[in-house]
Length: 236
Image (cartoon, rainbow, N blue to C red; front, side, top):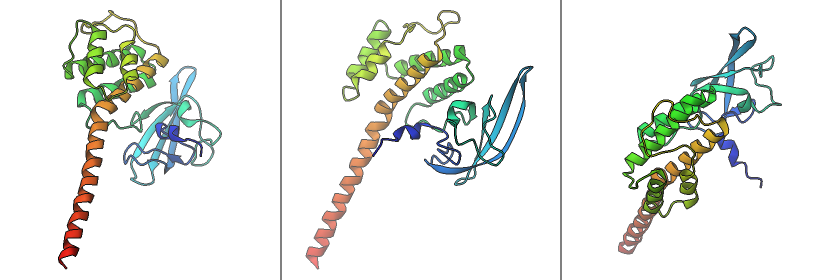
């Protein structure tokens, strides 16, 4: 069977089904219940789409420079909806796990919002701040940025070392605090690479270990219940 896990990373899967940013249900039906447009500039229109999840009934808003709706309450089925929408509220269907430190979650969300609006300076500043905060929270040791990342790599030997190698190679990072006009902004593809690299590392460090621990607890609980059931049967 073809691997379709990439659909879990999309906001809209097709003209009737999406990944809800509120109830976090995947592949759930939605209703495109209102559309209108306004003049973004003298020569550009912006189309606004309001969508309601048919599961939790929460509503989200989406902006596009293209008219991607049909005459009825649907998006055009012949297009990749996500690629035509440049900004959404909520900014993404993906809600970062609460086990990741709050300041990091908020900064990444802000960076993604800036990126969708093509505000590359703001997005770059947020991601630099994310990295500094991450290194500070983890109490990394080292004289410079690359050595601090090496410290992280040794601290978490069970995590994929390739992720830390990619983090170490991020261009323009220094061990100093962020200052205006002290760095160049990153372009959109590079920003996406940085964001996804950070998300993967954060998931491995803060989320996966607890998921494994919870799974182990569940199995041990089943084992305990089974043993109790055996003892109870032996007594009867």
